[in-house]
Length: 111
Image (cartoon, rainbow, N blue to C red; front, side):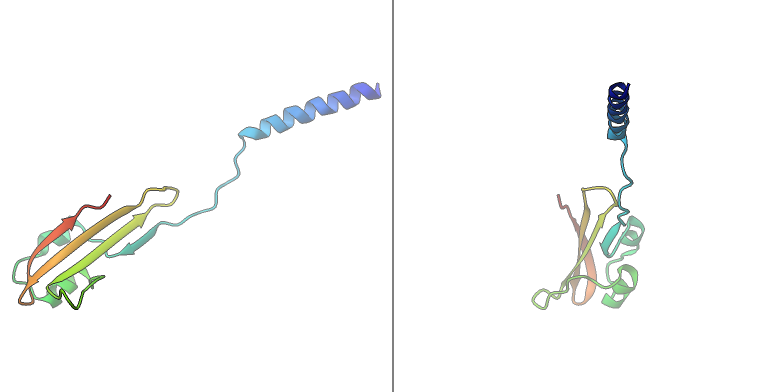
């Protein structure tokens, strides 16, 4: 009788543990990580040739990179890593100036 009870207990334990194989513990919450200036199409449409640098800063925010050797161009970067995803969204915008007045912009594709 005791041998059957032990075997039954082992059988029930195996069934119980095999049921746990599909159980997933809750994942740790990971926040979205956004860095840089988020610039959308509406902001880009408002850029007009001849705008001053202060007007561009008011519209787009401060640039991430404003090189001393190339003061006629500003670089804006934006990266977003959504929570739970391994792929990161990266955007790179270059704003060009001619005599400290906005002339054009270029969106650089990043992989």
